[in-house]
Length: 184
Image (cartoon, rainbow, N blue to C red; front, top):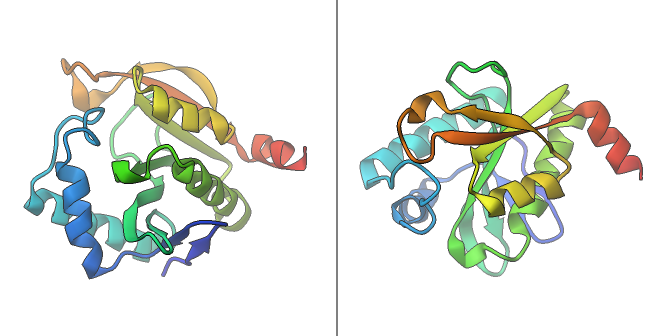
């Protein structure tokens, strides 16, 4: 079972059945999903929620549900995921996030991702974490840079061949880089 992580303003916790409705709304929102290949219908969203929750339970780490106490019971997710495609940087563990757009612009993705990175390196013991997004997704790239990841190149996402989002930026941080940044 995965632990609950807390920050100054957020609770990152295991998923609940009650998260499925707001998660489906998040995944059906065309603005939120514009940098992803497609919006998801309710069945696909529920299937994804099931897989996310099972992965978090099985590994003790994964994509945590995000709560903003006093504002919402489910704001989205932030966490770790092992990509299931082949690339020159896989196997690896990716950090990522998806928040309801009502929660954009408040620093929640950055705050949650910092807590997840700390957990990944100090508790789980990973040596390296990567993140990637479509090259034009400036907001996500900004979060990656704010949490200390370094742009190391670009790649064509193998699941998006021929899609306008195929080209992705790749970011990386090592445990050593994370420790050094935390010490300053």
